[in-house]
Amino acid sequence: MKHQDVQPRSPLPTPEILDARLHRVTLPLVAPFVTTHGVLHQRDVLLVELVGAEGVGWGECAALPAPTYTGEWVDGAEAVLRRHLLPAVLAGHTSAGVAGNPMASAAVDAALLDLALGPAGCSLADWVGGERDRVACAVAVGLERSIDALLAEVARHVGAGYHRVKLKVGPSSGLDPVRAVRQAWPTLAVAIDANGSLDPSTMSDWDDLGLVEIEQPLPPDDLVGLTEVSRRLQTPVCLDESVGSVDHLRSALALGWRGHVNLKPGRVGGIHAALAIYDLAVAEGIPLWIGGMLSTGIGKAVDVALASLAGVALPSEIYPSSRWFDTDVTEPWGMATDGTMAVRPAGPVHLPTEEDS
Image (cartoon, rainbow, N blue to C red):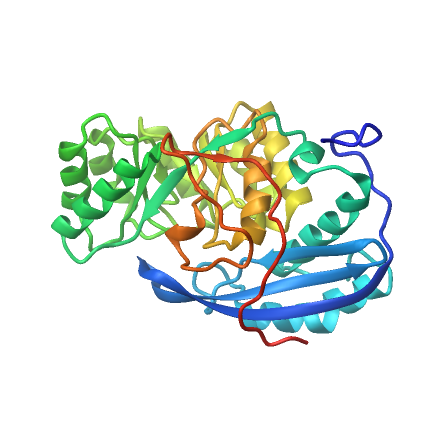
């Protein structure tokens, strides 16, 4: 229940911080996840724990093992946190003046909010202004070794109840796998994600497949090209890596781009930065959804809270714990048979193995 004195997005008292800790936890994935950036067999999780006089706050860094998805990576994020961000927090500063490194900053932002909201008696979903008790879930399917393997994987997710299936594609994957999925499920909400790898001259080939959206077909910094593609296609062009800040979205809109936004709080610098992007998208009538980053239950709590906002118009890529991990670091998150997930806090954190600072 929300504390009566805490209004949505109202300033919160700065909590007294007694200690700041980093944790590294390796969680094997239940199955490899394959994208154009490579293959992941495990998640190297970097967590921030802030210890206050009235409780503990947790935040998760979304960085991956190598700087392939973005320029940030887990070892670099740890160095920035250890040398700059956490010393600044312990000194009473919420910002260390660090340029870039949004995933490291997002972990601190989430931990600070988690620490402050506990004594305030307010959940994160209530504080951001969420209005939903349950959120609709979508799923991303990695590149598969064959069309038959892809169809089997999609069938599993359709049976689980997901509201949308997104297929990873690349320059060499071709249209045939997507065509096969569309033929097998003519009415299924299907999207594709190219992670910036498609040739703009072939974009029209994808326009006849009845896709919900084409996510990040061109490189993140090619806003001009992405705008041109969005004008040529009937299928909405979804921006992911291209929107690292509210200014990036403002620039895309100024160029004339119109489409969807995949908003990942762990990638844009945290909850506050995500809310700024959300507000602009809603004001401009841009449909958006919340994207996860192979998140544990700590990061998932942030994603779910933001997905509870009324302006999140599309199913969000938020998964039950069992999608990635045999054992999560929090109470397991589940998805109902109708493809929705309950909006709730993360719960107690239990770290199976760790390298503590």
